[in-house]
View (cartoon, rainbow, N blue to C red):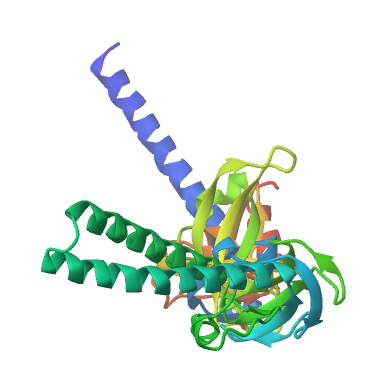
Length: 370
């Protein structure tokens, strides 16, 4: 090949490259006059910047954290004579919620008084022997035996007192029993925490055993929202994102991602925390949750009608001095009849908010085929 032929070939390649670039530019630039824009019914407006992007909606359930649920049980067996609260009632920590007539409580009181009487007797003997030992009247061995009996009696009283307190008898009542020696078979059951009665598991008049459950009480200052998120969407959400419960103003903060995928529906458990007992939110409720991503990079909201689809890609039409430029964007979220997009924008652009269908038809007619 001579030098002249080589120059001609290079020039041909250069012209072809320029031609292809011009075709691409013409395909994306729609030259329209102001009159033509008005005749097509195209309305132009600015991009609307957003800082929070709705990522997805998913079913969820409101649950009580396990650490905030308590079961109130009978500390001793007996007859359940009274239930003082019912389902849905609010209770305060230390409030009496039930009353039991317990013969077993009488036996524990008897053991405590017997141990107290035995301690009183051995205390007198111990104090006397200590005095006699100091005076040299008795041998050390006898004083040691008395001291051992005294320590054993102290242990018996302490054990009997603890059994009464474990049975549910307040320390003040135990102290009163030691002075009055008056037995009382009625045992009060107290709420272990401030909360709400979620379930009643016994009826008045029934004979119950020790540790039989009476109530389930929950502290509702914090609730969990357990969301079932499709595993292929997990990359779109992050810890700290918000989950809005539909038809409410309640927002939960995502705090945990599950480590496994549900085998039947291929979803991952995402947990969000709800603080402060919001109105209208109840444990056990099934809701729809919309996960909101807090955007770090710029994102914009615009009507769905402003977006044109072509070959699986999304485009919007940005206004310039000569008409409109079809610009590819990425749709990252939906909110009603609007979409959240990302693209190469500063936020000051004007775009076609209405009439995108006419622009798309004209755009594709210039060389693209849908």
